[in-house]
Amino acid sequence: MKAKPSHWYKENWSLEIKKQSWSEDTGRQVDFIIQTLHLNGSEKILDLACGYGRHALRFAEKGYTVTGIDITKEYILDAKINAGKMSLANVSFIHEDIRNIEFSGEFDVVLNLADGAVGYLETDEENLKIFDVISKALKPGGKHFMDICNAEFAERHFPMRSWDAGECSLSLSAFEWVPETRIMLFGGAELPYGEPTKMPVIREGDPIRLYSPAELKTIMAHRGMKIEKTFSDFSGKPAGYNELQLIVYSTKCTPPAACDQDIGNASAFHHNLISNG
Image (cartoon, rainbow, N blue to C red; front, side, top):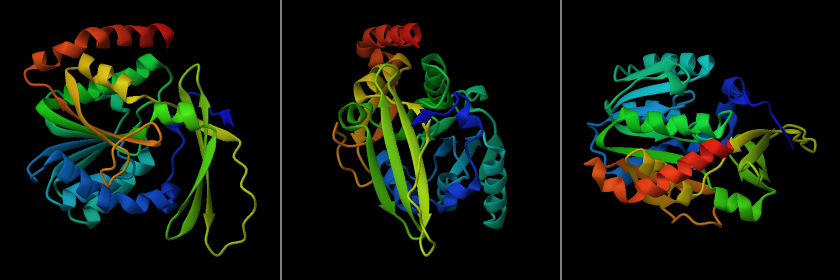
């Protein structure tokens, strides 16, 4: 596969994504997050790179106060329309690049789901800005939950292809790995049921910077955060290098000194990322 241009994430999306099979699992994912983070319904939630609001709307239905941010105008317009149809006054959506938001200590929970734009940006330095936004937006003791792909798996198993059968279509995903930059190239194709099919050809892939659990530990510690648990799926299976999915639950340390033991290593790792970006 050829990598798409570095600005791919700004113009890659449409509401056709609703047809993809993985979007059907939203309710179970939200329930898992509530259970894992021990939420009680009073929390204020920030959903970064919220897409068309599938998670944000589900949380709002359950009574949470939610703010969703996304760079794709079509997604935000659709999310606002659906919030209106559902008479949800406790959810708001903002069309913006998540690097530009200025929330400070306002949220109990921050989410980055279905990648949540983690690793999507042009350089390592830009990608690290997302973690800055996460930490700054959280209240002391606040909780972060992200769902990404695991670099340790990519190193061992890419290139590969996988299939997923949804209610409306069969989804093909193709993965390649660029070890020098730790970039995953991801391409896909949808084969709707009941329609004539041809052999799918995937010529371009989304370039996404992947992280290992060890990398994330130091990145988080540098921002006063601590990883609490990791999983490989929304059923609670433990994370591992033979599992593509990496789900990470972290908390913002209170007091910040609780993360000091990792800060030295994190600072060195942060410097190396910038130097090699």
